[in-house]
Length: 120
Image 1 (spheres, rainbow, N blue to C red):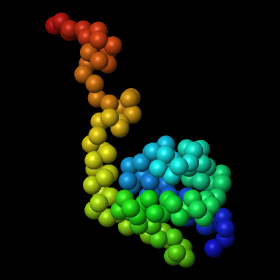
Image 2: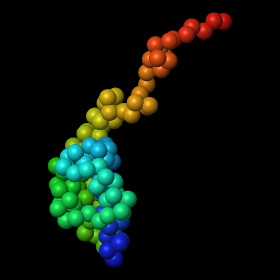
Image 3: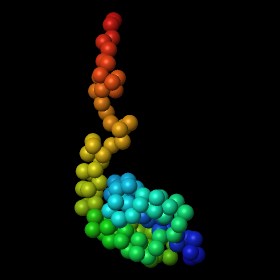
């Protein structure tokens, strides 16, 4: 496998494991102690992941219950343990983590407090 193919495997593995847990790029960057732009560049192949970055990412994933196996020749194995599924479930159910444009607000809030009554 070429270096380019290895970088693709790493990018796919990092993005897949990160999203399985429910971390956005900024949250993952904060946990990694790096800039969000570094995460973006690695995941979009603008730069390769350095060994220390990859080791730290794999350790964070393992601690959260996601095991990534990059040692297969032409494949990536990602094992998502029950612990990670519970973390993802909790994050999916946490309304404060939803994007502001995706939060379900009562009609009065959507209209900036100007609820109008329909007449029939």
